[in-house]
Length: 312
Image (cartoon, rainbow, N blue to C red; front, side, top):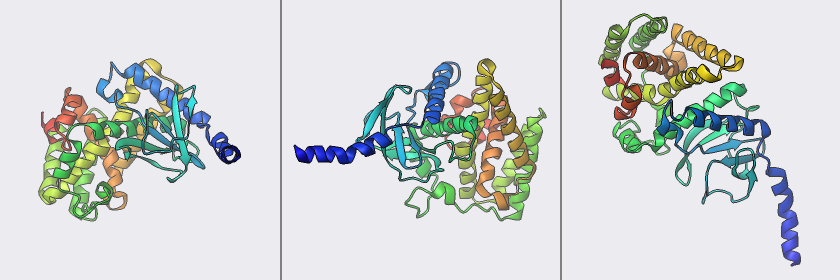
């Protein structure tokens, strides 16, 4: 009995100190749940049905929300009344400014996200970045995703799954840089309403002709994998603003567009590396969505390759 009481006294301060999901983030995650519920039918039902599992990285602890019963995670938990679910927690293991999603707990894709104070984002962008990462969860749960990504044959000897970040694309090649600059200029014109699809498609074919097949597969992989979720941040924000607009969201939408214009005005492939794929890819998908109304259906039908949707 004494031993049990002693153990409880040792554990109790840890539990009491840790069991408090940060209030600001809790309210913002509740807001995401509201957005998902309200746009579920009108925007993309299958996306919003994917479990929203997040590991929030705070100063000293990590809080797991959205997982019904994590067998391979700390079982220390409490019930959060605002989020209406059980929250699990453990001592912090990830960097405090983390922003990524990947299979983590019981093979489920999990968003690992630093709190608002430690992230690179203000509160509004933090919310929409989480929705960006939630779409990655959607990608990872689609049938055939891992098989088809392996069939791209881009991992080489990488065993840690980091090849999407570390693939040796010819960023230093002057010809490639010039073509990317041409593509960026055309996409800028498309943002202003100019019809550029034939010219853009020709520029993309030119890129394909000067790089290896693997390099082109990687290029299209990045456009599909990262460019599309960035596009969705903008597209979903526009959709949400039709009925739920406020000053912060209008400001964020304007910032997204300004940042894309800035990136495409000076793509500078040698310096920016793979980061250019976010704005380049987002704008390619803006172009696709304006000319192909089946873009949502076609996105997963043509995994890792937007060329077919560009042509149709």
